Image (cartoon, rainbow, N blue to C red; front, top):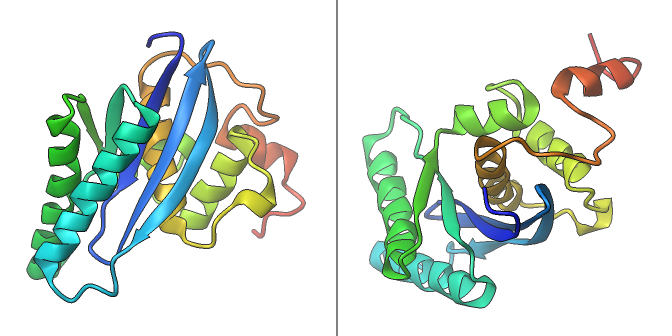
Length: 186
């Protein structure tokens, strides 16, 4: 991985799209921003796709990332939901490709595993570990977990791209458990 770079992470969705942007400097990651694109107010699915494309493009133009890390749709039971989610992912990918950015796709299980050590971790666990790894003050955490899911995609790409170093007080999920065993319900 290059010494200094910016990674855009996206959690695609047709109701809410989450995004997070990290800066990697000297092989250490820090959060630049995270947020959500609310799509509930749009009833037309194609208008939602246009908004996803436009917002992804604006994030690319504003922050100049070197790549897009995006969460792959998971296989659910509702085929129509899967198709809509795939289209949302495609709109974000199309925006990245339009700006000649490489795209890296990660399964939800892979993202959770790389951050928490547990592929079945809850979204709250992922958000808490990101807060700790990236030293994000609690007051800067957003209530929408879609935002931290987007940030998680970017951080997963960082972890998969090389041997990161960290100033975090936790070096692994096991280390976190060992240091917080009194707070963990058994």
